[in-house]
Length: 427
Image (cartoon, rainbow, N blue to C red; front, side, top):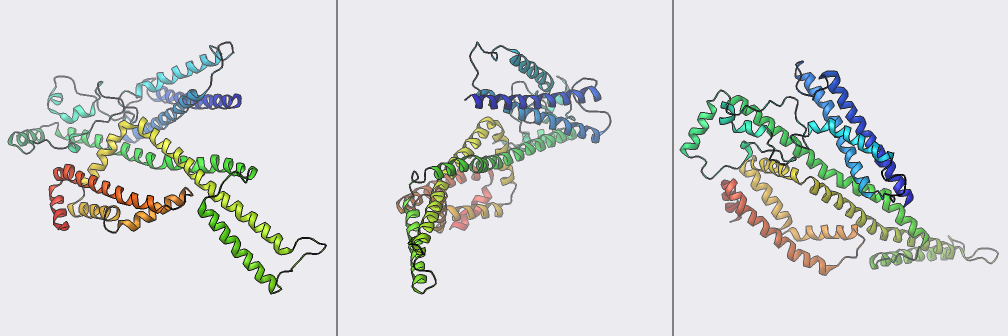
């Protein structure tokens, strides 16, 4: 425990130092280019602005990543009692001083959202009572409202679902009046910027959700669980019980090797006995082969435990990402919905038919058997026909019901022509 606390303390100090250095770099940018003020749009052109924006975003990401490490290590760190030097000592004062400095630097850039730092070229919000504030809904989207949560990126009206009264005479007249407004071009530009920001956040978060759990799974399996379990098996070879399938495979391979040696001994290809009264060469090779096969079977049995523990670690990482970034999922859902609705009707129907026939169709039974067999082999479990048949009899039926409900509840309102094509193809 003492070594773990020392390692966590060192890890926390290193992460805090990295975050402090990133904050110092941001302050240096402010002093060198903006007179110590907040980094905003420069008068030197878009190229310089984009370059400074990239430097700012890199340092802010560095601060955010290292502060997350500080939080995790601080949660896991077991603090000593009150009579030791740590509690209330000089180390805590230094930590608080560095954190206060970091907050004073990066706090000004956390006004709009914690996930998307404000752009250098973001226009100022219109003054209250002006024409733009009264007739520009897109301008209200760009400006930040203090009542919004810090991680929710507002959705522009072009990607919001249309209301039930859409298409009426009053709505058409209002749309024409808005398009004739002299501020309409600015509204469109701001709306496109907001859409681009949402898309960038959604794509980045999608990549994080895909790759971070996979990296955690691979890291924990190859670096943590595999050496530990292999070392335990080498020290206690009889502590791991082989499952029935691996035991039968072990006996079958051993019998095949034994029969091969006996035939070769009868043919004179292998000496029948060793000199000086030692065991025969065949018996010695059988012992070596038995030990080799048993060790291989034991490692294959441990592969199931390694995969199970590593998969649980990856699942915990995925759950943590979803929980701490749950507000970003709304942006990701908006992106996937827009991407699907932007497809033409034949493409939508093709994807639906391909998915349903593959997982819930008539020919999906063989596919599910292959998938379940691969899962059981992944966890070194014996194949169970009862479980496989029960799974195939229930899960695809539930999936089919969910897909039909989704088509009825969502697709009929968003793309009724696609539903009509689907009904004709299913007849």
